[in-house]
Length: 181
Image 1 (cartoon, helix red, strand yellow):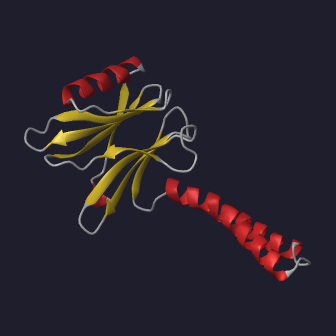
Image 2 (cartoon, one colour):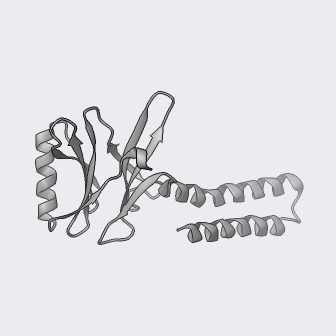
Image 3 (cartoon, helix red, strand yellow):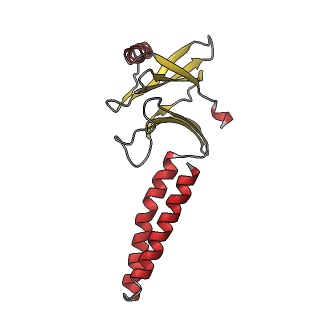
């Protein structure tokens, strides 16, 4: 992925350089406007790339489609912190990951990531700190581009379990703690 970023950066630089050469015969104010406009347009793919590849994130790709992925991205603010569960679904949003939910909740810690057998559903679990019980908390269905999340914990857990079993069972991966990233 880092090689792709370098190639993208080189292509953008070349585009801006060629624009500057091609508009060299145009008067200065218009030339400056064209070069700045080309640089702004060229920066858009770089910005999108950086949103999909954060430096402190756990990333897991779907077993069925390499373009589908999940990342758990940790961040800290002045007064709070978060551990966001996000999905990379380019058909639903081309410009950045879709925020599904926050894995930091009082009384819980991040558990595991489950991929359905056909690779179309990603689900995250939380582990209760009291009795160490694992419950499904969030899920995303890549087939219908839908976030699955309920206010009722039992209904949510049941719906996600049924969805995973209907899509060929599941494979489990441990989600690292936000402190490990």
